[in-house]
Image 1 (cartoon, rainbow, N blue to C red):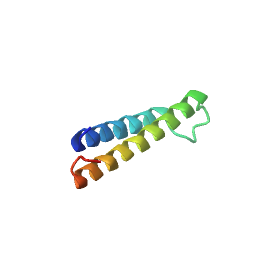
Image 2: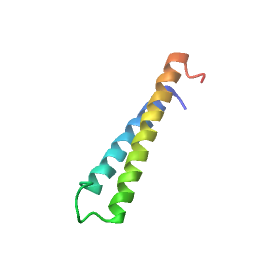
Image 3: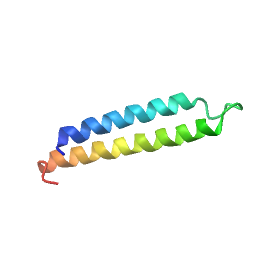
Image 4: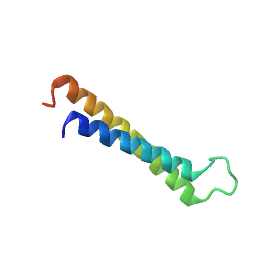
Length: 67
């Protein structure tokens, strides 16, 4: 994949990850369910994945997509 593709995928994953975390609700809510905790963790993982993809895209940009 090219630099732009990696950056776009990274941005998408970050946005979706943040949305999942927001849907999970307040971590201090006494009515929070196991599903909320699971959604929070999935969102955090997806956001981290997106940041990694963005870094890969930046590295490819610096080295000319040959990485």
